[in-house]
Structure formats: C-alpha cells, structure tokens
Length: 140
Image (tube, rainbow, N blue to C red):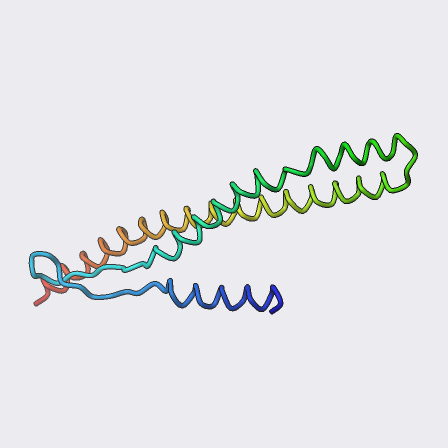
C-alpha cells in the first residue's frame, strides 16, 4: 500500500474516532445543563506516539552520522571518487532526518495545544450554555 493512501486511511479513521460531540447532560443537582464531550484519548495516543518517535529518531537517527562523515572524509583524502558520493548520502540523510524530526515535533506540540484548547473551549461553552439555560428558565 502506498504511503499516501495509508496515511489518508489513518487520518480518516482518527477523524471518525475523535469527533467532537455536543450532548445535553443533566447537571449534578438534577437541573438542566450542557456539556461538550471531546474524545481526547486518540489525540493523546497520537501525540504520545509522535513524541516517542521524536525521541527515538533523535537518538537512533543520528547513530551513523559521525561514521558516515568520517568514511566520506577518509575516502576523499585517499583520492577515492566514492568519497564525494558518501558525503552526499550523509548530507541527504541529515536533511531528511531534520525534516522528519521537525514534523514529529510539530505533530506532538500541535496535539498538546489542541487538547488544552478543547478544554478551554469546553469551559467557555458550558458557561455560555448555562447562562442561556438560566435565561430560558427565568422566562418560564
């Protein structure tokens, strides 16, 4: 399966699982009340996976850097044409590793932000709906 297709399927599945639902729930005192229910489990799991991947990539992705660079330098110093090619591989890997590390960091940070923002939005919406409910109760 191609990466783009698999990524699209995973995104669609995650979107379905983490849909935001607005439900009417009774308040603890038995009166009317509303609550915004956000499924944060999926966001947290994805954020944790991105954070773990970031840590592993930062450590494991850098293992070959020094030895590859040393090999390229030694080959070049001994007039082997392959030294330049090995250096290109080294540079190419470093560029793509940094890109992947940045992407994992952005995913992790964005999901942390999203969870916090949902919590703030929930408090605001519950308060506004409580005010509306109180106004409609006063009108009765």
